[in-house]
Image (cartoon, rainbow, N blue to C red; front, side, top):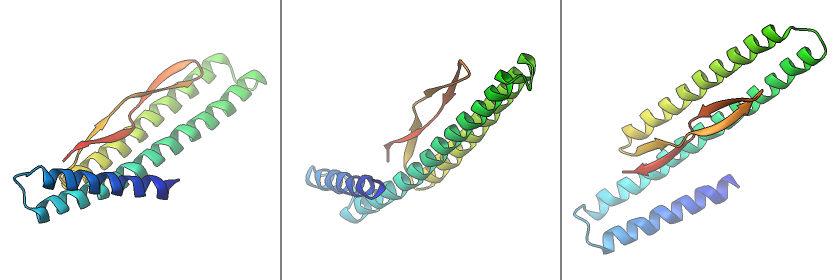
Length: 138
């Protein structure tokens, strides 16, 4: 699946490059090719970051399930459960924000602008906003 997405990204970038060159952009073809290459590199950075974010969310779900099981089995109080869930959420948001910020910085160094579209994740009935990435443009 990753190879297919990567291939489609290359095709889309190549198509965009062809359209941009045929539309008579002010840049040289070599410069346009550099932008296309940088955009593909940035997309790879973003894809890896989003994979890490997804893995972090999945890990948080698993940890939350264990906390909830401990609570349901009477091993921890409701107060302790809530405290552990809040700490888990804080760590998830900190970790995913750090991943996103690093990816944005790397993409920016390639001249590619990256945006975030907040995604809502529910952990123990609490809404958590996580920021997966996407390319805005060069």
